[in-house]
Amino acid sequence: MIKKVAKKIRSQVSNKKIGQIPGSIIYTGKKLDQKLFIEAFDYNKSKCDVKELLKVEDCFTYEEEDTITWININGLNHVDAIKEIGVHYELHPLVLEDIVNISQRPKIDEYDNYIFLVLKMLYYDENEKIVSEQVSFILGEDYVLSFQESEGDVFNEVRQRIKQAKGRIRTMPSDYLIYALIDAIVDQYFNVIETLGNKIEDFETDIFSGNVSDDVSQDIQNLKREILRVRRAIFPLREVINRIEKNENSLIKEKTITYFRDIYDHLIQVSENIDIYREMIWSLMDMYMTTISNKMNEVMKVLTIMSSIFIPLTFIAGIYGMNFKYIPELEYKNSYFILWGVMIFLFISMLIYFKRKKWL
Image (tube, rainbow, N blue to C red):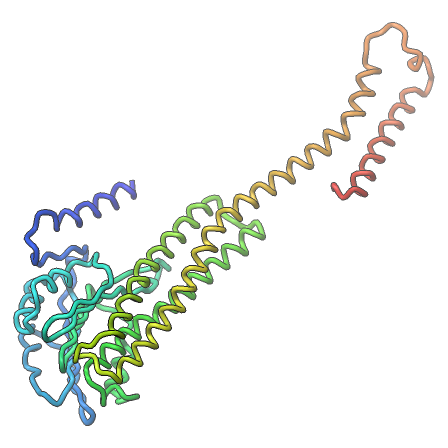
């Protein structure tokens, strides 16, 4: 039933775009009740102005040439507001279309007076389920626009650095700001990867110890989906950062390229960990099946040993249970006790033999 509902939702989302004119600004997400939240940071080396904007028009008042402005817009379901922002900043209709289409692959597009980037922000929610949220950036000469589907992100450290003038962020141009925002997203990837690694190690420990639930195969399948989701978000980003490194656009300054190289190194490290964890996840099912097979072998070994012990006893009992009229041993007074003694002796002898062979 859950699979049918999920399939229906995916179908509804994809159908929103079918047959539409290129550049149609249609929100493809499911968070239709999100409130529009806009925050603005306007700063330079000597001052910092932080505001929560009540109207879209308030975004258009930041025109000072000696400051850097970061405007963060939460609520992609407010299409009209995004259109207004697009008109003011002269954004291409295809850019606006990609901003509200949350199924975009990480990418970078260059235009005459701005650069457009799409990334995936990853984190775990309170139920330890991985969440992938699309974040879009517009990099201009003295401003950065960021668009998110809902409130809650990984940029709090960047906000504090701007407010408290930590590091060099207040003295650098807008390209350094977008570097800091991307770096915050990439740093969060490390937390996600670490959590995935802990999950895999816990699975390995449980499987080896035999402390697994009946639906462990489904849990492993869910873990495989998580690593694939992370991989789809991270691997295309390597190409994006690589293009920024080789970019000759005047919006990306030469001294900032070095910082983007550092991000690229981090992405390589994260990608290598993903490949390692992916191989480990693929081997978890094999490990689980091997453990089940070993348990079955142990059961079969015990049953085989028990059968082997009772075969000679059954043979003896079968002989003396035959209905022949004359069996000489039946005439002996103590033949019953002698037979029991022989059977017990065989039983003990076979146990000792199996023990020495380390079959028990």
